[in-house]
Amino acid sequence: MRLPTNFSFTAVLATLLLVGTGAVSLAQQVHRANKLEERVLELSDAGRYADAIPIAQQVLAIREKALGRNHPGVAIALNNLADLYREQGRYADAEPLLQRSLAINKKAFGRDDPALAGSLLNLAAVYLEQGRYADAEPLLEQSLRIWEKAFGPDHPDVARSLTNLAAAYLRQGRYADATPLLQRSLLIEEKALGRDHPNVASSLNNLGVLYLEQGRYADAESLLQRSLAIREKALGHNHPHIANTLSNLALVYKGQGRYADAVPLYQRSLAIREKALGRDHPDVAESLNNLAGLRVDDIDTEPLLKRSLAIRARTSGCCRIP
Image (cartoon, rainbow, N blue to C red; front, side, top):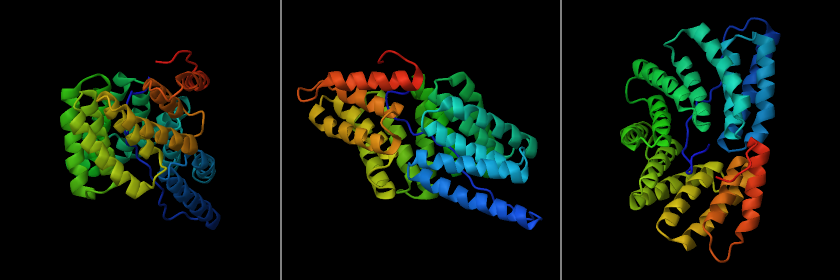
């Protein structure tokens, strides 16, 4: 089950830098894979996940052939492809790739290397999306310990683990546990990255979600508005992350009875998701459901709910609208 609000999980995307490759043909293959991987990261940053997936699959195939199936560079390719699947809600496709990436990094680097922490974080994010908190929490706690030991308590990678651990707590209604983690994550990222960095926008969004869940609408609104402004400036107006913050802000307005303010935000969120993710993505179903849930006079709820139900049935086998 997905959160009723859009919490921004953080994942670790990477690219391979390989030196001393030996044969020219091997070096050429690795260079080609690296260039393709740069394109994968660009498309992912732009929210163009469907366009990135076939290129990421190509990177994986090249590296497996050139470097062998158990090379750390293959682990990076597995991780990046899996994160694209996660963004599309394809958790069954993402999980085995991340488990394999984790096994490769554990064998190559040992149990305390930052590369392993990245694999742990990404696998935990997939578990969180599926509500598998008992599976996610130990992975997140381990990644947090590794990064704090390797980089110190104020590194942006530490903030990643704090964010996802807070997500696990938030989904279980453990607000008192989640709050200090999200506040610490925000402080780390503002100090390390600057107040207008997209990661800061994600932390603002997440803290806004927490306050929204607690009914602290005024606090949530100010954080979400700031998150939206940063994201629109950094990512443009049609990125899926923009849709997430719009949806959360609309929930704030709905909670305050400000339905007229919520409607255009939900409509814009829906339009962004349909364009960026496709008309049959689970997030589109969520947007349809949210818009129908306002039950205002000028919105015909029945076709919205029917379409939402159809999408959910196709993508997850469910047969009811939560």
